[in-house]
Amino acid sequence: MRVMAQMAMVMNLDKCIGCHTCSVTCKQAWTNRAGTEYVWFNNVETRPGQGYPRTYEDQDRWEGGWTLNRRGRLQLKAGGRVKNLLTIFASPKQPSIDEYYEPWTYDYENLTNAPLQEHSPVARPKSLLSGEDMAVRWSANWDDDLGGGPVLTARDPVLRKVSEQVKLEFEQTFMFYLPRICEHCLNPSCAASCPSGAIYKRTEDGIVLVDQDKCRGWRKCVTGCPYKKVYFNHRTGKAEKCTFCFPRVEVGLPTVCSETCVGRLRYIGLVLYDADRVLEAASEPDERKLLAAQRRVLLDPRDPEVVREAERAGIPRDWVEAAQRSPVWRLIHDYELALPLHPEYRTMPMVWYIPPLSPVVDAVQDTGEDAEDAGNLFAAIEALRIPVEYLAELFTAGDTAPVTAVLRRMAAMRSYMRDLNMGRTPDPSIPAGVG
Ligand code: SF4
Ligand code: SF4
Image 1 (tube, helix red, strand yellow):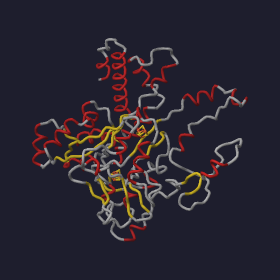
Image 2 (cartoon, helix red, strand yellow):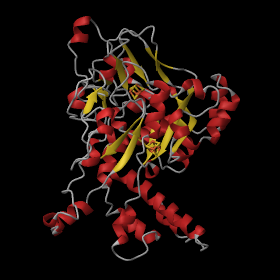
Image 3 (cartoon, protein in one colour):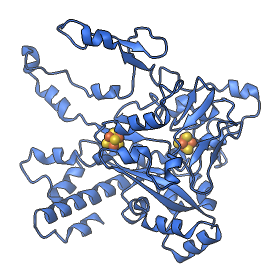
Image 4 (cartoon, helix red, strand yellow):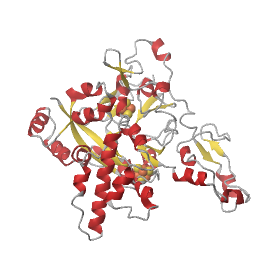
């Protein structure tokens, strides 16, 4: 056993309201510079949607991440360490600025002075790079407006006669927000794909950083990261990425995105893991077993043997105690509520998510029954507006069983807390129903 410490994060998606405060405060802190206009170390995606950069999950299109070769060994999809210049230039599968967006701003003079017209806003967006007027073709969260169904306005007599079919279409529409930062992976493919050795994982806390002095601008990390969380600064010619706010973390402050999160949904904590088991877990041939494999890599910080090995590895005692108190560890291990994003990318991501339960209330409200009653919540999980299959594609490589288990546990907790808050005796049978 080789014990190492890792900074990790869990986000509770039920609480995200898509306000982008996290993105903006992060940008103000870290990427408020020329060359990083399109760079969002923290972004908040509309789901379902194409993500940022657009279609980054289409791994066949971009390459990136790890895959198993024919002998069952783990290898980089992007080709691993690059052998020669030709290989570098022959591997151009990187998102273009169109897959991100061309940064733009409003022509504010026109916006504020233009005469009132029938349609608004009347000002055209202006490119931040060239200053030209531009038709915006794509931007983050475009998906918000693509939920389906026509726009209904009370003034329009045709649309007021909404058909049953259209009503159904609206009722089946679902949406939630997915905030994303770099995953600070245990098996970071960005680092493995860098020909200059400029990307490294800090031994003390696992934060993945780019050494700006060593970076030669090959951009193999952009290709190699399956989450597309390394960005290229076109002014400096260097790669940049989320730093997990290490200068703040080192003095005991939370990351900017966590501190400013309006929904208070981000939990930060130290976890301990067995570095000897990382590659074995990442090479698990059955994608659906990757969640369990990744959970096994994390060590119980209360286990006396783990504590001993941590001390032998030079991990300070107060760090071990911090790991024992870590909400991240509890949410992943004790409560089994948190799930990793796309474990099938095999990089062992360290930002985990509690999948959203909210629409379960909508799923039963038409019945007139108490939507927060545990029985109804359990039943409604089967009829969730957010299909369990969709959540499973995001968090468990398509395996619906762990997602359903998490949702049932969340439903039980919600019902239990509601009973307590209403002054009722909580139903003791609920935990048994959760399993
Ligand atoms: Fe590297 Fe972060 Fe991408 Fe993981 S998510 S491969 S640590 S840039
Ligand atoms: Fe979601 Fe919090 Fe970011 Fe707002 S600040 S978008 S609630 S993660």
